[in-house]
Structure formats: structure tokens, C-alpha cells
Image (tube, rainbow, N blue to C red):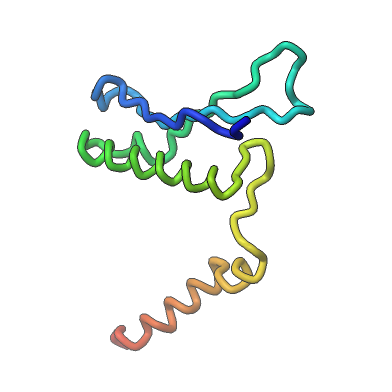
Length: 113
């Protein structure tokens, strides 16, 4: 049985005054499934789609989100498990304070005293 199915975009008939989203169905883990209950649960993703106010750009963003979700699911992402965004060595190297310091050092050369 596949772990996910039906990754689709909802565009509200092209009306940008309504919420657009991407939805998919994910297999409910055996230990969480109720006897005789549904096998898949539907998940909706609204992030970054509805902040765009142009129909063309919103459709592009929706397709980008849709493909990103497909890629994550193909890599083993599960909405039932905590997702590990990156390993700790990456986080230590790229924390916000270090990024600000590096940017200020970079920008210092082009700034007037």
C-alpha cells in the first residue's frame, strides 16, 4: 500500500479572493488507525500560496508547493513524525547570529565610515 496519494492543488475556480491550497492523503500509521476507520488522512498546505495576489504568480507558487511536497514525500517525509530539517553541524554553522556577523563583515568593505 502506498504511503501517500492524490497530491492536488485547489484553485477555488481561479478566484484569488478565496484560499488556494495543495492537499494530499497520507497513510495513517497502524498504531494510530481506528478499527474500521479510514486508512488515509487528508492534509492541506496553505503556506506561501495565499500571500500572492496575482493569479499567474499564485498558480506558479501552488505548483512549486505541490512539487516540493511530492519531493518531500518521495524522500520519506511523514506528517506523523517530527521532521528533521537538517543535521546539527549545519545548524551550528548557519545560526542567525553567525549569519548576521558574517554579513556585517562582508558589508563593512562597501560601507563609508
